[in-house]
Length: 87
Image 1 (cartoon, rainbow, N blue to C red):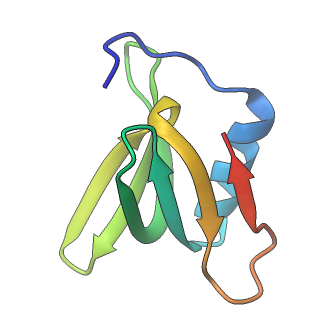
Image 2 (cartoon, one colour):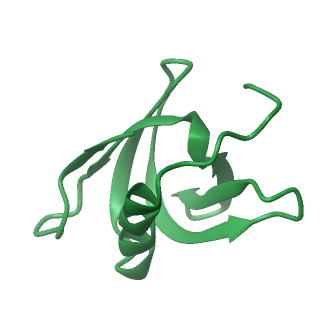
C-alpha cells in the first residue's frame, strides 16, 4: 500500500457513505488485486486525514480499508441503490 494517502473524489465518497448508511454487503476489488466481501459499517477520517471504510467481514471480524486502495465496489445486497462503482 502506498504510504501517502491520495484523497478520493467527493462523489465517490458519497457512494461509500450510502453503502454504510444502508449497511450494504459489498464486494471490493483492491488495487493489489485482492478481493474482499463484507458489510459496510462506517467511514472514518484519521488524524492524518486519510479516509477508511469499516467493513464487517464476519460476525467477529471488522477490518478497515483505506479508500484510496479500493479499485471497485460492487453492492451484493439485493435491491441496493447502487451497483458497481469504479474508483
